[in-house]
Image (cartoon, rainbow, N blue to C red):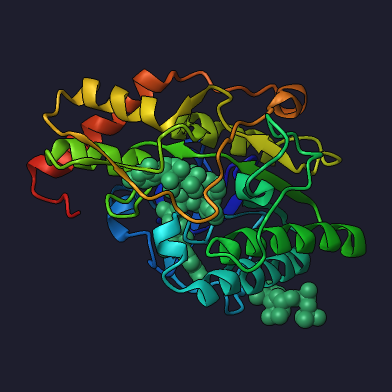
Length: 321
Ligand code: NAD
Ligand code: UDP
Ligand code: UDP
């Protein structure tokens, strides 16, 4: 085995972000063990990696213990879109909390460095803008988003308690809205929804008045940030924001996707979602300082790649919506 080749476990590796991460780590020469229960991910996402002798795919639910020998763990397993995480909210919390305990127990036993895919949702509907890591957040603990938001907040607590109590090597990334090829076409996230609606010439659905904002990071930039975080100096645990600080309103995003796809779809307005954050934008100065990281891919370029991916699904009749 190459001396710098690591054995890397990626939970949720058959999902959107996980599949890109698997690919990047294989290309970098590592052994990748992808663990997934295929709740929202799929074998299709990692199909072309299966030929690699350095890639292994294991069906497993991380709410159950897992005994493997690895050097690094990226803990990405968790449904990430509101439609999917609210479908079975108890399972969502279990995945974040029991899953974190099992992966932390595993990391403790094998002395692996473990990275948690946390989220901007820990900030809830924020009163501070843009959000820095020092902000504690404003989350409704019993609202429809709570299973995800509070599950992720508890996972962060567990990571820092394993760090404090057991001296574990931890890294916590707070990921902001990320998009790109292999997003699930039916997961209801805004970029995939708008593109799928545009390609199918169906109305583009804006929830609320479209003035709420998000900041969209292209998947390649995000994966680069995760890899840099894993490789950062041992004292740097995070939490660290990873996302694109260019903010855009949902109304403006709809117009951009209409223009880029040339669709005949109309834009329609639906009632706002409960507890939908009105503004979201990361302050990424900490990532700049510690990881020398900032996104480089413009929204227009990223949307071109993403539209091309969904066009391919559309033309082969694989676009179910
Ligand atoms: P995704 O739904 O595509 O991927 C999640 C993967 O986890 C799927 O493959 C799913 O099958 C798997 N999974 C779910 N529960 C599991 C369990 N109990 N055991 C094993 N596997 C399980 O979502 P994604 O966008 O790739 O998100 C990956 C991670 O990044 C998630 O933890 C998510 O919370 C976090 N994140 C994503 C974003 C984003 O914009 N994409 C933003 C913030 C945080
Ligand atoms: N665990 C695991 N794989 C391992 C080691 C532990 O899945 O290689 C699980 C184990 O089932 C336990 C959890 O991780 O429930 C937490 O482990 P820890 O050692 O922190 O706690 P304890 O075993 O004392 O409960
Ligand atoms: N949204 C929308 N139409 C859709 C899907 C989402 O207007 O078809 C809005 C949603 O209300 C939210 C924003 O787009 O304000 C981002 O939603 P998404 O589910 O992608 O991410 P999150 O809310 O988790 O940031």
